[in-house]
Length: 151
Image 1 (cartoon, rainbow, N blue to C red):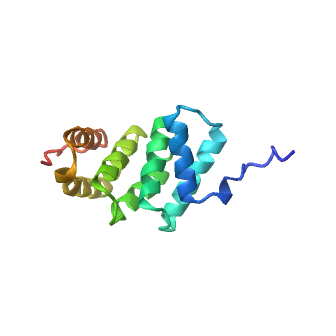
Image 2: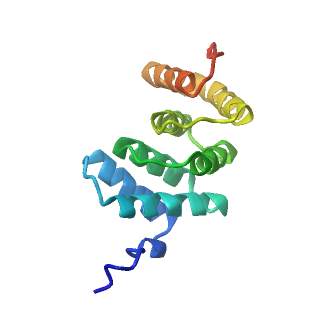
């Protein structure tokens, strides 16, 4: 048997597929084996580093990881946060979900990364429904933003 191998085939999956799996696990509250979940998250980060991660995959992947309470390193979360901020086609609601997921995952952004997230959040605010605005404000506070007076 190949169970001694560290890769369970996750390397064959692209970021989209990894994101969908993480999201499905999170939504159904199915806790996959830790090594499998970590490998899926690692693939997401690799795709983000190559600028190959689709905006919806970033959203689903981070959302799923946060629902599962995955442990991700600050370096991994930095890559995903920076990738999200650079996505031009990211829908306001997706941005809100990403910021919320980063906060739920315990992300500790640098001052400049936080400023970037805040700027994107400010742009997104007018398009959001009240409950999404509230969630986004709360998430920014949890990320250390002390200036959440974005309308």
